[in-house]
Length: 243
Image 1 (cartoon, rainbow, N blue to C red):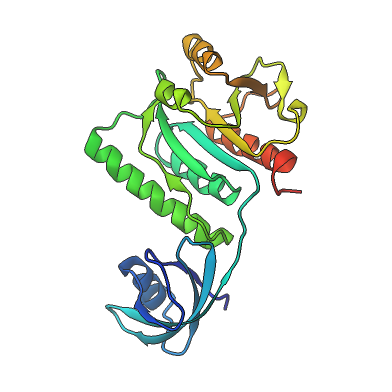
Image 2 (tube, one colour; image 1 turned 180 degrees about the vertical axis):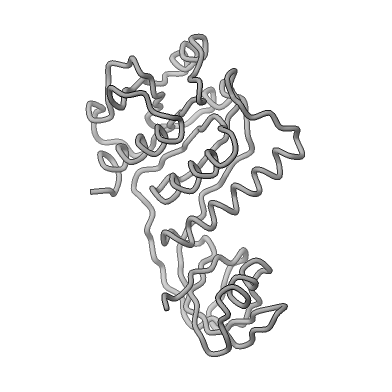
């Protein structure tokens, strides 16, 4: 059986015994039915991985002893900050999961004029927490040892106005440039992906005022979740670590 990778929310020290968090303990003890003497791999977001052995497992808790830890850097040299106008239901969850597998460093959910998601503050906060759990699960699956942050949702223009060094890109079906025509080298990208109905003309003009460059992915119009993943892949191939 493949050794399970489990995220631990606190910094890990070699040689110590720790209790897994409730969700992790349930997964290891009840779902995987692992027992004393079996091994798992832990990571705490510090870019290290730790080998650990189960010393006790029951219905309520799992205790492990941390054997050793090593730095295991799987982060892309390209820092991508994804600004994604929120989409409905599972589409947003899919975008977050797959963009993290592709190496995105930071995600900010956005509101725009055509944003189809309408949530009050309490429900939105619960969504952010849920999306952060999806980010952790994606890292467990794909081998990343740093957890990208899902920031609080914010207004599109406020996000565009934030100071950040690097390339600012907005996907536009009538742009004249493509990712392949962007000049090398690039180390940081702020990537804006609009809603299912696209950005309005005023919003597109606003992004230009904040020095965003319009780029074109190809001749076909893509869904918002497809656009995000296609753009991230193209950026990682040109500037990052996908070959």
